[in-house]
Amino acid sequence: MFVTHGGMGSVMEAVALGVPPVVVPQMAEQRVNAERVQALGLGVYLPREEATGEALRDAVRTVRNNPRACAALATLDQDISQAGGSPAAADIVEKVLANRPMRSDPMHAASDFRRNSSVSGRRAVTSEQHPAPLV
Image (cartoon, rainbow, N blue to C red; front, side, top):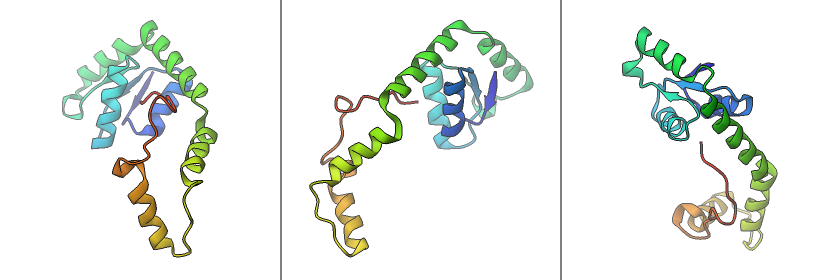
């Protein structure tokens, strides 16, 4: 049982340890994580404005010893492990950058990267190329 603000590090820790979290987010990014935790059946999202003692107790009771949440956590942990982690991410970055000339001026290099990256819609890495679940 893990009560957390829902930062990515905390969510990943819950997944790695197979512990269903109760997520009480404090910031927008944490709220997105909390929504995914609940949507994937990993734990419970408890909005901060609803986080009374009674609501927290109920959320803890919901996730405590919940076999479905534990199974969902185990499946996601396995999916993440099979995705390849940082070595696979580095391979993707290197593959994207392999066909680009490097500039000596870092400011131009950064603007070239932004212009040609998935942010602009070009050369996006698709889920078919590298499937990885989102948390």
